[in-house]
Amino acid sequence: MSGNPASTQPSQKPVPAPDPVRFFGTGWVEHDPAYWLRRVGVSAGALVAMGAGAVLMRLGVQGVFTSQAGSLINLLLVVAVAICTAVAAVRTWNLLSKGRASLRGWMADEKSVGPMLLIGFVGALAAYFMRSLLEAPGEGEARSRYELALAAHARRAPARAGARSGGRKRR
Image 1 (cartoon, helix red, strand yellow):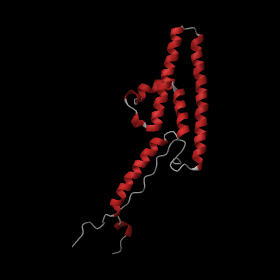
Image 2 (tube, one colour):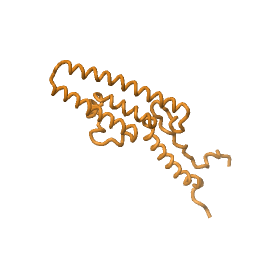
Image 3 (cartoon, one colour):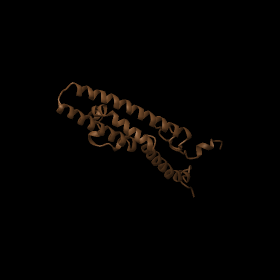
Image 4 (tube, helix red, strand yellow):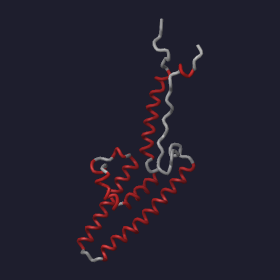
């Protein structure tokens, strides 16, 4: 019987690989040394972008104020920008911590929430910055998926190890 010994063994699936996270790759799994440098860089970048966005938003709102459109228009503009910023911050926080599956209703629909995200981009950047202080943005959701995949792999491993390759036992 000159066969390939590997062909008589049950094929074992490799251990599942973690999903890469933007800017961090798979370094978030073991928190390699570069992970901490990237966390600082992402936090600083989000903070700078948030500051620049706030200046741009302030210039836009100030332009409406100087046009003397009226106090009602000014109030409506400020309220609209505040609401859009809050919605963008909450949606971004949920996306980064729990994933896209956690979004429900109109928050999950990209077309309906798109204009609000465009106006409230400063809130999205603020949520990204705050999330980067806790962990890599998106790490929590990726880690939970990875741990579920590892647990499923571990449950299947004992069943595969005891499986016979020859089929039924003959007597």
